[in-house]
Amino acid sequence: MIKIICVGKIKEKFFKEALEEYKKRISKYTKINVIEVEDINLNNEELIKQKEKELILKHIDKKDYIITLEIEGKELSSIELSKKIEELETINPNITFIIGGSYGLDEEIKNISNYKLSFSKLTFPHQLFRVILLEQIYRSYKIKNNESYHK
Image (cartoon, rainbow, N blue to C red; front, side):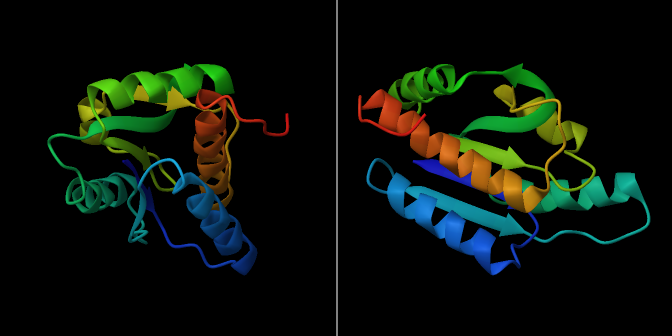
């Protein structure tokens, strides 16, 4: 099972449609659950990260293998990500990806992470990044199953 915990709600219809399409495609291979937690709006960066941490922690199970999306994380190719997911599924079928809010993730979340993953040194809007993550998860299953998919 793949679980994605992310901060903030998707408002744009075109992002929602893309997310639903990839969730539908991924569901052919595994159960997928996307959990949105509230995007905290305060004037204090540390307080925001702390409150978002509390919301994220409510959705983490002790048996989850946690992959945090962090700029400081390890960059993988699509093939390497596919192999990572395949390897993890044999060890722990509960893979949880965590996408932080505008200020990133609280240190406590980073510390419980089993794997820190970066897609790029670039900064992406959270809505777009969620689509990119789901697309890469879908691509990973296509690669794993030796099924054709556009390059």
